Amino acid sequence: MVDKHGKDDIVVVLGSPSAESAEVYARTVTEGDPSWVGPLAGISLGLPVFHILESEMKDQIDAKVYKEQVSIMESVLETDEIIQAMKNVRESVSV
Amino acid sequence: MDHPVIRGVRFFMAHTPGLVRHGSKPDREIARDPEVWESIKSHLRSFDDVVGYAPHQVLLGNRTPESLAELDQPWYENVAREAPRNGPHGELVSEEEFYGLLKAGDDFDLLWLDEEFAERSRELLVKHPRVPAADLEKIVGVPPSQIEEMLDDSEKGAKPLQLRDGSTIGLIQHGLLEDPSLAPDILLENLAVKATGTMALRLVMDDFSIAPDQLQYIIGSGEEAIGDRYNRGGGNLAKTVAEAAGCIEATGSDVKAFCCAPVHAMVVAGSLATSGVFPEIAVIGGCSLAKLGMKFGGHLAKDIPVMEDILVGFAVLMGPDDGVSPRLRLDSIGRHTVGAGSVQQAIIEALVQKPLENMGLSFTDIDKYSTEMHNPEITDTAGSGNVPRTNYRLIAAIAAARGDIPAGNDARDEFVAMHGMMGFSPTQGHVASAVPYLAHALDSLRSGESKYTMFLAKGSLFLGRMTHLSDGESFVLEANPAAR
Picture 1 (cartoon, each protein chain N blue to C red):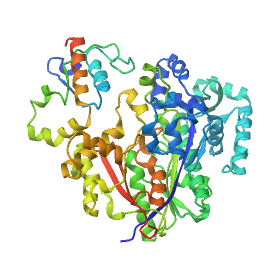
Picture 2 (cartoon, rainbow over the protein chains, first blue to last red; picture 1 turned 30 degrees about the horizontal axis):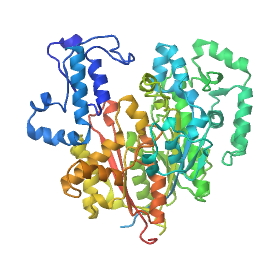
Picture 3 (tube, chains in turn blue, yellow; picture 1 turned 120 degrees about the horizontal axis):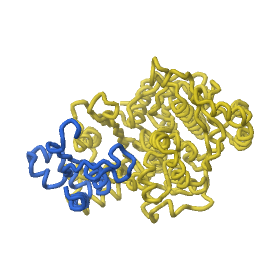
Picture 4 (cartoon, each protein chain N blue to C red; picture 1 turned 45 degrees about the vertical axis):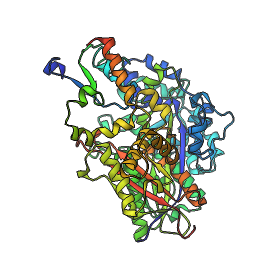
């Protein structure tokens, strides 16, 4: 997708269920696959990345749609840990 | 409305560390870098460690799912010594025994075992009460030179079979070189599915005193794809297993629905039993060999054992209401319809809330919910989260929205502790989907300890690239009112 559309018009939105998986996917699309086993091992795409539970995403989505489709997962997943993991990745890779 | 009963269920587990290299993920990674197998090999578990692993003891029926919450984690560092490999709900065999069982089911001589190893395997299986003499006679090996010659010829495309220590004890051949549907890995998976399904069916028939010729129909519910290039995935593992288990009066067919298939199959089987079309009926599921070592990357990164080293088959006996066995309520079937959408909330409403409303029950009337019973020690350590806990919290959130429990995290956690359990399935896929709790549920419903259990399964149809849909189905099992 980056080859086809370029980096400037792409934002990656994650829906992963834990802080750890959110961090892995966030690092994969920024500095490259940290596990070094997938196709993005060693490839640093530097894409902006957010989790659907973060306010940066939530604030841009119609509140009614968000409530229907996402909000129940806020009470189910470890939302605070996921948000903190995403912040840590963005700070450490400075996208 | 008449309701069918579930008479019994049994699980057959095989410890297969040597086969981990044939799992889909390890196979691809080892082809790219052969050193990966060395790393995996150094993290494979011994048979004793696998027998004493608490989640396996739960599946065998030697301890309850509830007891896992009291056991310190990590469980893989808290292994019971001298634990039994058999239990009231099933049995666990070693890889030395399992290779012999694979050979016993190999009707086309595609799997060769080293002659000395075959002898060793046969000697171990002679003591097994459910391996008939006819099967033992089929466990015959070939000279080691014949195996070496075949593996050295790269044009033949055979793949080696190894033990946990890396020693080669045999091979699996191509069924037809130019047919990718008969490639060695696919045939190996299908033989493993046949062996695990057959042994589970033998176990359940023996334990519940059903003679093989009493069964009239068998439904397969696994994820394997049996067939050649003109009918890839054509299937009918059920009839294959029926033959292997001596069910000469039976026929059968497979129900395909990803991880959700066992629940679909039990609903279909229950309907056939109740209608009188096939009163004596069984649902079986063989293993998912492709999922061996699926999350090895996460486990190696944490320097913990590669825990996806177990194959599981299961068999469920069903029939018309006998006044004793727990009843599968045919008016309780929760369906994830095409129009329901794929949002988690909508799925739980369709699978849990709607059937409860139909039955006039509240969320708290269900003593236990059995959902995707993935072992969190396998999934959480590899970035997939604690799957059962997420499902239980979702059910709790819908229960709170409906007013059945108070809102807030305290009430949620209390609901999860009381109506849920820790995951203990050794593998993902159709085996993990609601089925693992079935034997414990039957015990609890028979003893009067519980009255209702709900089984809900979900399937990821989108993985096949034909639709973006998910799938799901559920049913309620109740203590037989005539026996209460």
